[in-house]
Length: 157
Image (cartoon, rainbow, N blue to C red; front, side, top):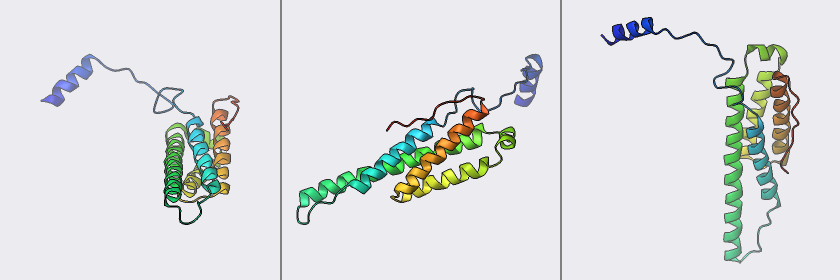
């Protein structure tokens, strides 16, 4: 019964056919959000590596050290996860087959960037965190290249 009513309504009020090149309105996608999150992870990696443990026997100093270290680690992991999510959404929702024609290494570029996110999340490597920033800069250039625009890549620090 409901199908018949729905069918009649569709016949009386047909919807026009529409097309879109992405899942959302133009301008929704931008690799900047991945860069910001990855840069926070890089910053936390630097802070973790620079944090000096206190001298033995000072319980209050050790508690403060552990609190600070755990906060740095938590932020690093959270921000790296955000960067990975932003990259995966950009990869799977924005890029289309015509982009692969222009950038044949697109899948490999994103796959390696996602793997770097995992490495930064589970480790404390300045090399991996820096490599992630470089990978996101490459993705930034590819993304804006698909739009025929040159947009400067910059970092906050």
